Every structure is written in C-alpha cells, then in structure tokens.
Image 1 (cartoon, protein in one colour):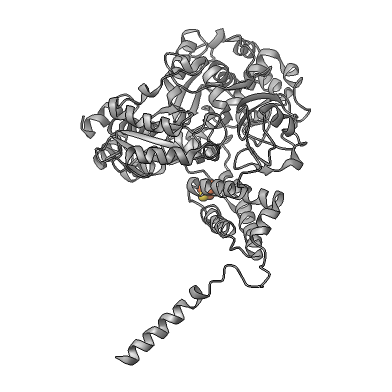
Image 2 (cartoon, protein in one colour):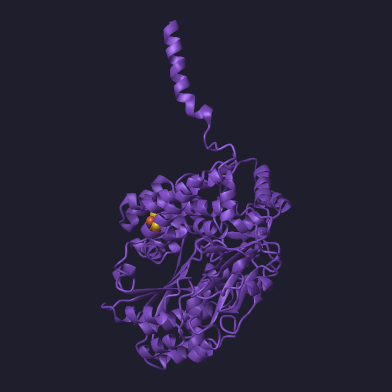
Length: 603
Ligand code: SF4
C-alpha cells in the first residue's frame, strides 16, 4: 500500500489528537519500513500538528527512520554485557553473512543491520531485535543462520525455534526470551490473589490507602528512593479535577531487565498497583509507558487489561466501589533512553519529542497534559499491590528500617548465574555476587551506568537507599576486563542518548570521551585527570535532568575507586616529556609556511 493509504488506515484507529502521534508514527513505520516525506505530511495534516513537529518526533526516536531501511531491521545490542559475551564476533558474522557494514542495508532492500543500546536482555546476551522480535543468546553460527532463514522466509517470528519459560510461551507472546528468575522472594514474586489488593483498597478511604503506603515506608524503586506515599499525597492535594497515574515501564538503564520479568509473569500485580494508585490519587486515567524494546509484550498486556475490564477490575464502579471509575492505556515508546526521565516520558505520551522539562513545576502539580500526575515504576507499583494485599507490617518485615521490603536485581556480566533476583534490601553486595556465582569480581557496576562502579573493598556495603542505591542493575566484571574501556562505552552511550538541550550534558559527554581516548591511548597528562573531574562535576551540578547529572558517574566513580588505572595512563614519563606532545604535529603549520615561502622564492 502507498504512504497516504497506510497513514489513513493508522489515523482511523486512533483519536485525531496530538497524543496519537507516536502510535501513528510507529504503525506507519511498521508498514512502510520508514517515514517517507509524504507520510510525514499526511500525519501532520491528519493530527493537526505542525509538520516540523512530526519531523522532530521522527528524528528523535531511534526506532523511527526518515530514510529508507530494509523490510527487516536487525538491531544488534552493543551494551557492555553483550560485549562481554561476544558482541564483536557476532557483529562480524552478521556483517559477513549480509555483505554489509553496520548502519547499511542489503542491496535488495531486504535487511538493514544496525546497533542499538541495551534492549533489556543482558542476562541472555548477545541479543538483537529483529524488527520487534527479540533473538537472544546469539553466536557466530546463529548469526549466519538468522540471515539464511530471513533470506528464505523473511519472517522474524519464524526465527523463534524454542519458546521461553512462563508467559514467554503464552500464545500472545511467543518469544524465546527466558525469565531467568534465579531467586523469587516473598513480595514481588509471591503468589497473587487477583483482585485482593484492589478490594482491600476500595474498602477504605483514599487517605487510608496513602496512610498504609506511608506506614510501609515504600520508596520508589527507580533508584532515587523518594517516598511513594508522600508523592501520592502531594498529587492528591494538588488542585485540579483531572489527575493521572503513569507507570514507567521504560527500563532503559543498561543492564536492567527485571521489569521485563514482572511484566511477563505478574502483569496483574502491576496493573493492580496502577489502579490502587488511581484510587488513592483520585485519578480516573492510568498510562503504562512500555519501552519500544518490549513491544513484543504489547498484545499480551492488552489482553490482560481486557480480562481485567471483564472482571470489573477496570472500568466503572471498580470492585463494587460506587463512583470509582478507572482505566489504563498502554503507550509504546520508540527507543529513547532519556524517556526514562519522568518529564521526558510525559512529553513522549503527549506526542512530543522526549525532551525533559524544566522543573518546577513538578509533575505532582503539572504533569501529563498539565494535570497533577504521579509517575511510579513497575516494581514500585507491584510493591503497592503487595502492601495492600498483606498489610504494611508484612512488607516492613523485610529489608531495613529505612529501606523496607525487597529489591529486584538484574544481575549480568561475569557470573555463572545471571538473571533476576528478589532479595531483601540491606543485603550486602558481596552476598549478591556470591549467589550469582560471580568469580573473582574485580569491579561491579551497581545501578547501571548512571550508578557507581565499585571494587572489592565495597563488597561489604549494603544494597539499600542509604548505601548502594540501585534501580536494579548489577553488572560484574572479572579481573581480565578493561575497566577504562567499560567507562568509555558507558560515556559513549550517554553521549548518544543526550537530548542535546543543555550544554553541560551535550558538550560534557563529548569532552569526557576525548579525555578518555587520551587516557586509553596512554597520551593523557596528569592535568587531564583534573580537567575530567572538573567537567564531570560541572555536568553533575549544571545539567538540566537526571541523564546529564548522572552521565558523569562512570568517570567520577572510577576516578575515585580505581585511580591507579588513570594514573598509570596519565603519569609523566621519566624523560619529562609530555606524551601528548607530537613534535611533527606541533611544527606542521610552521613547516607548511616555510615550504610556501620557499616555493614563492623560487617562482
Ligand atoms: Fe537533555 Fe542531557 Fe540536558 Fe537532560 S541533561 S536535558 S538529556 S542535554
């Protein structure tokens, strides 16, 4: 079908409003393989949005394209965990088998090959998305066979030869992804009595529900640890009849994949948490923002929502509570790490580029469509349901006084048992590593790139909000790993994902990359290390959103934890000469002038 027909078809399935923009762009791209100029014009007219804004959205998200791509796009994940597991070899095999380089398309227009940031499969790396289909545990042989099969039948779904465990084998998922739940704890992975949490919530007042969440001392599981009950209280008290609760299922922090497992195995617990929050806030609308990398779960999650409507757990007079009307819709993202930042996520839902907003105002006062909004993540909302099911005291029975409950951890890297662990907060990092079978870990990235890189001296520290806080990612590195190479990879990731709005983040990441390259080439000066610290600190203080404020963490944390790595590379040589000083390069301009003068004299 031609572009106008495809756009008309997509528009007919969505409300004619700006908030439909991302959905329409995704659908059109899905059918045409890219967003041609005439499609962009049709979308702009159909949704009454300036054309330049549609261009802006199309250029912002990694999964949208304004130039032709192959019918099939292989997005090979190049995250650090994938590199540990053989990304380079797999990439080379794909390139050879396809006869193209990264970022190119086969001459017949069938297959494009490109890199992508973490797709949430670090426990089964190397992995790729083939269109929306995750293909995991790739090897060099598998890369060749993937290309052979795609050339034969052209259907990414037929690449799935073995279904994963649990709901990965559900007829509406049909994925080869494995849950790898290594330790199921007493809260998030406990058996669920569907509807119990909601029934208990609506049996009391919204204020009582908030009091229960406060009594459980629940703190946001995204890493920052803000008290959930307080967030709800602010939003409930904010003026405005229309309020929203948004579930942030955009877990883009490299090395994190635990929300994927919760959404696959216990989506009812997540949706119940959203509904309970809606009741407590006085909201009638909830949105689950699902990262584009997890689009393979969409049909399954929509089906779960449909069943909840049929069972009176969504819709009107929920669970028999007169006047409590609430429903949930799913917004799928399109590949942008920064959308994990809550205000960027709200912009994305509204059909704008996922640029973070300036604060204040905070979402509690002015969030989605300018209305008071709470953004909680998947794990936080799952905890909410459990707290209502079992009571605050049963939740507080786990963890520490300031960090109650359990924490889901995504463990990957150099360890024998990668996967998802539900463990009580307050557990030491060393114990986590032991359970995961990490052999002689030399360094551990706690909380993903935006967290901290720690060494063995920190293994006695605790996973908690007051010590080693983490959104959930734990990546372990054995003694043979190049830690500075890891720092560079993370910094490059942030440079790629920066939205570019503010200078400290946009330029700071590039400057750090330059200094890191000097360090890695053995050409750095001791003064470069001081300069790195200065740039990183400026980023932390002056960046507008969390991305820039934490992008400097890989550099800052390794400068303080592994100073010897830098100092070795940046020491002054015994001969006193500056390593970065290249005599030929420094005198090249003068030599050129001399040459010119000579040739002019002979003319
Ligand atoms: Fe954009 Fe980075 Fe500034 Fe955040 S800190 S607004 S991601 S440039």
